[in-house]
Length: 158
Image 1 (cartoon, rainbow, N blue to C red):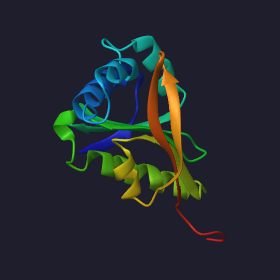
Image 2 (spheres, rainbow, N blue to C red):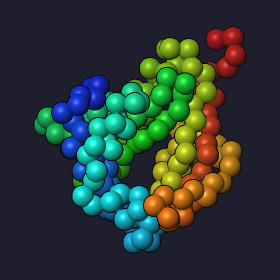
Image 3 (tube, rainbow, N blue to C red):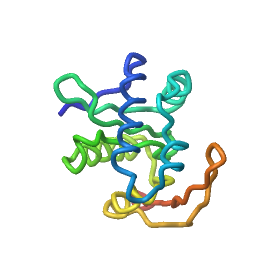
């Protein structure tokens, strides 16, 4: 697996990967209305083109095909982290997360934060994140439950 920076030519593949991941992996935690609101089909490529250029994004690929991606901001915010259903539980998200944490730590960031779905919460907890608040958010008129989470990645003075 290779991890590389996002390229504009990745937009469609990542939008489709996101949609497949939501519909293929989140069905046990979210109902059909929520899945459709979260990941409309087909995905809006204009939305994704804008979304992916406003954050830093790393892409994991195998055989030149994207199998996962992570988007983050330089302030320590993990915005998006998705692996394709075929690559789930094969270390893709873990590798993307490790790379991002190392990059942020090397740039002086000492705390990470995210808003995790009920599906993603265990992943982040297993990496040391703690829930700071349970949130209810609305998307396209549909309410979702998610969790604000934080992790200190280095002590002060290091």
